[in-house]
Structures are given as C-alpha cells and as structure tokens.
Image: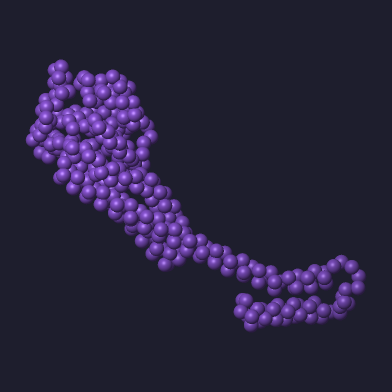
Length: 329
C-alpha cells in the first residue's frame, strides 16, 4: 500500500507495533521502513485538511482516487467499502469537546489492509485519543482486526449516555404532558426532536456498515474480531431501536399537545362567541335607541332609561339561561 514512509506536517501520530502489541521504533530514514513484517502493523493518523496529507496519500501510497477522496472529504456519511487490497470504514463519533454539541458528530475515516492502518480526521475525537492511550500504556492492539474492534467499541460505547438521554427526555415530556404543562413541552421537545433526527441520520447507516464488515471475507478480520463486531452491531441496533421509539413517542406527544392546544383555543373561541351572541341583540337595541333622530319612544318619559336598562338585563339573563339549558355555556 505504501511506496514511501516519511514524516510530514499532516502526520499527527504514528505507531509501529509487533504481534505482541509492543511498540517498535519507526526509522523514517530506512528505505524499507514502510514494509511491515508478518504480524507487524503500522498506524498513521493524519489531519485531513493539511495539504501535506493529500500530497502523501496521492504520491506516496498506492491508494486509488476513490479511497483518497473519502479520506480527505469535508462531508462524509457512515459507510464501508471492501476492496481486495483493504477496507475503507467511515464512522461518526460523538463530539465530546467542551462547549460542543454532541449531535455535531465527527467523521472518522479509516483505511486498513492486513498490515497498515491510515486514519484521517478534520477534528479531534476521543476515540482516537483512547487508541493512542492504549498504545502508550499496556493494552495496544496486536492486529489490524483488533484495532478495528477496539476503535468501533470506543465510538459506540461513548454513544450510550446520549441514547439514554433521548429516552429520559421523552419520559420527561410524557410527564409534562400528563401535567398539561404545554409551554414546557414546546421548549424541550424541539431540542430532543432535532437531536433525534441528527442521531438517526448518522447512526442508522452504521448498522449497515457493521453488517457489511461481518459479511466480508477479509482474512485479517479473525473470528474473535467478528464476535466483537457482532457485539457492536447489537449495540448499534439497540441504539436505533431507542431512537425509533423516541421518535414515535415524540410524534404522539406532538399530536396530543396539538390536540390540547386546539381544545384550549376552541374553548376560548367558544366563550368569545357566546359573549358576542349575548351582547349582539343588546348592542342592536341600544344602537337603535341611540340614533340621533326625532320620534324615539320614551324620550319625554323620565323613567324610560331605567325601563330600557331593566329590559336589557332581562334579555341578557334570558339568553344566558337558554344557553345553559342547551348546555352551550
């Protein structure tokens, strides 16, 4: 896969390991430095936006244009691409940086053959930091397949709390709905719904990614590695089921909230309609008696005002009584 190994500005981390997981020294001056012996693996982690990384991938590797383009692309979606000479895996990991939104998921691109691993990123991820920590301590991967299972386990393991938050958020909304606290529901539901949509967009394809890896006949993915991938597949399937369940519960909550909003609006509209119905004949009567023309009855009679007032009160009382008898008020 490699034509030449050299240090460049885009290289963030390099690890040269034997089959015992021991870290070996990588001599960039040695002509055959990139030629790993059987059982040895070479991991190169690079920054995707550094021009030197593009130059290295295009000129010093045998990777074709499609693989290089995916390793350097600004926008990616989770997928796997199995070739005879290796496997491309694109994951999405939670953004766990301080003051960052977890749903702003970070793309992690991995190219692997039986002895070499190339990873690229636009932003740092905790999963890569975990792998560096494993290598620098006492639990490094001793094979490419083991590297794949370890990093997928870290990516998917860090999603667990956020899936639980989705479920807890839906439960809180259901409790608010039971208390008919519609304003609080409106404030919180939009955030949960947005997160759910983004999580589904990037987590659902990762189920197919794992299924494709398990269906592949790559010989350096050993039986133990496949068992670990099955566990990751089970975990991702559970996440998808949780997200689907939360989405359905949010839809029910949204429908019920809309129904209660409509009922409240209809009740208010009904009250105003009833009030307008009661005062409409009174307004007509007072308007008719208030016209500034001659001939208004009772204009010369002193008690006329009180008679009209009592008549209006009686008419209003009669209408209220009628509405109550009909159950309209």
